[in-house]
Length: 446
Image (tube, rainbow, N blue to C red; front, top):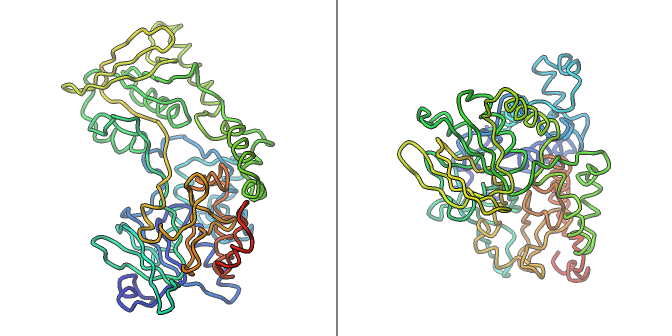
């Protein structure tokens, strides 16, 4: 039986890798590590996850909501099509492979894909310590002034583990507008299902949903279908929902080859690509859902009972918590007209932001190299460039959109990226591939 992280921490035997966070990114890494071991080289790894169990957006596992990328962009297939950890192998293990083929879709429901992720995560449970928050990390200096190891720290500075390589995959945090605070009746869509389960009985029979992206449209759809006696107000600053560009040529921006090209491109080209193709991911909605919401709104006008209300070109300018509800103040941007809505709850579908790696790096942050905009310099292999004294590897899975493009925080590239990280760690190299960084200076870091 392998040692637990706590037992290993006491023995201070350094691991090859410690992963912070155990969502899809580091789960894909665990898969890649296990498959790498078949080459004859085993890399010892452990993971720490702040949640009590594996979960993938549990608050948004809405009935009927489907994955927005092909199931082939699972944890392993694009890296290893023969993997036993791919979605097709999962379907075979569950006895549903033929049924899924007959379904004729590339896009399973999110409920099913979450079940797949949980199925894989259970196979690695012995490597994960759940319910443990990593608070920081610090270099372990040797007699020569070099740091070949990193100590991973928990609450009160407790040393959770020691490692030769640290892989940060802390995920995303819900983004709320300034001055909006979570309460019993005001929340981010990330907590939708949990909050709805705890919501007191409706007295005002009205919801407000703020935002114009896929999550906002899905929340609007869910509330409208599941609360047939309530009005649902969708509030956003644009004129209407914008369709996502999921056309074949545009989708190439998520390919592994495109990620490599993006990383090697000059800064101005990177910015242009992000601007050109933002409509593949940000503040856009599947066209089928847009048309369904429009159909409902139109039909309600026909029958004279409008429950689905669209307040476009509008902004929420204030919230007042009142007895049994929330008073929402909305301004129409074009006319200046004001509307007051008394609601049972307000859902902000206002996106996410990546966790700043500096929050987890602690003392190590001061040894990391930054670009001209103060961002971490990250190599093509996702390794952070550090000063020469830090020999241990620091890797980022997520939060590197500026360096690796739009797929940085998405499922699209998790399998291939995990393979890149494993190869880098196994090879012990520091080939950064960072544009504008002198190769000689990179070599000096090795």
